[in-house]
Length: 342
Image 1 (cartoon, rainbow, N blue to C red):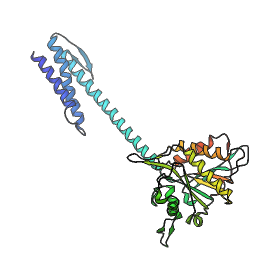
Image 2: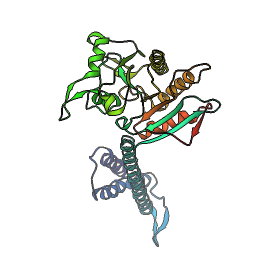
Image 3: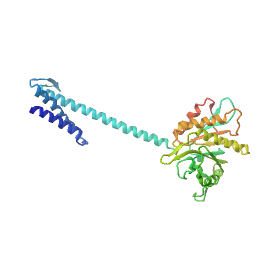
Image 4: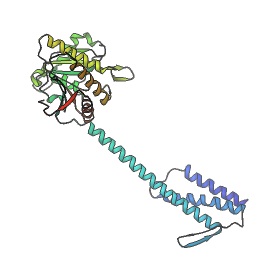
């Protein structure tokens, strides 16, 4: 009975040491394994010895021969410590791998948020002479060859602040009247929108408002600025992309058609991935919907709007890849060797 109680006590102490005591750090972990498995090894040995006093087992380890209960004790202790060390090594390697994966994801995220340098690619319709479809990368501030700039805002017309990292904020800032030090003294696009929608009342998703270019005329040769409600907000939820991005694009193109019908010579348009910034829209899906709306509208039989070029601007790598994939997948289009100027 005494031997059986000793075996039980050894097991209880071993389990207590493993599960109920704080983890040791540094080199102390190895010492803990030795003590744990010493206690674990005592349990079966003492238990077997108490039940079968005449039992015997034998084995050889590192050239030494062991027999009886002592051999069973040495084997269990050695095997347990060895297994624990192997498991700990695997745990360390898995932890290191997880850390490296997290670092890699962080680097990828940072790389995706770096603004790309300027580049331009173009696609043309395969079977007819019509509008060219372009992918432009980089900052919109560098573009000087597009008559119409399309900006994305929310349905409440809560305009992007000048210092926000968005294309809409860049358009608003470059259009504003500034003093000789560069400080904004008149937010002209906001003032014009306020005249069209008193007190910036909410507009329906997809609605397009037209403004003059103001400072963009001198700085970027822009003739018209269009503002489309491509994002909507919900209290407690935040902002999200409107459901029908295709409608946003179609409505903007309809406005260009109307302006050209009145005699304005608008020959080119550039737009971002609407609602993929603060609206958190998926870049790939957004690009697919935008390209589909552009191609369907501009290549419709008998349609003539006067636009010779439309471009989707992508500031980041993930946006560029999404737009390029969407354009490549359109069987109506073929990539052009001469993209043209910015």
